[in-house]
Length: 237
Ligand code: 6PG
Image (cartoon, rainbow, N blue to C red):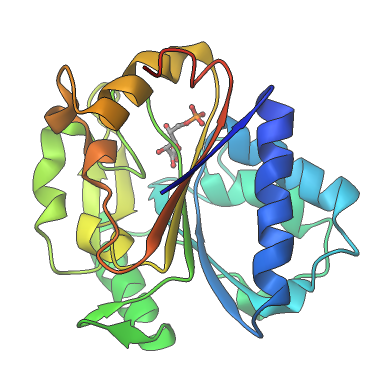
């Protein structure tokens, strides 16, 4: 495990952007699952503004670790956010963007998206292997769209499931735990004081850590890296 602690969210985004520059330089093709959330938004803007020429955008194949079941024009859509902040500003070939069709029936879409990922990615141990899965940490310990009341998604051998947000009831399509844990690298991007308590519980196996989906992210053969700011790492003992 590697832990990278930066001074603020902007510096955290920069640390991860530099990591991406390094990774893409080593390969010809990189399958990445993106996440939604506030730090990725900063990251995408930073990539568009400062990394346009530092990255060979055609090497990336973009997928999502989770998506809200809404139209791609909806402000809740992770695709919409990424499209506005990144894809419309850098030369990514359209065919390298594999979005979740949030506007479709959630069950049908979870199946379609899982099959697409299976077809496109190399298979390792019977599951697709992403090069990088980007994750966030929710204040309730969720990650991707695996929430504490759906920990059974860590026992799902299919690639994707339909998840339900515990408060809004919004449906999401999410990668299941085993596929996330089958990645070459899993990277958490976590910023803000609201995450500090959970980060400490997860790192030190204290409190209710077992209830937090993020604590069950343990790559079977890959690496895990935490990119955090000082505020998120503040309670670490
Ligand atoms: C989503 C996410 C989700 C997110 C966390 C943290 O689409 O909502 O993928 O898992 O990463 O909720 O979000 P923040 O970085 O905004 O705190």
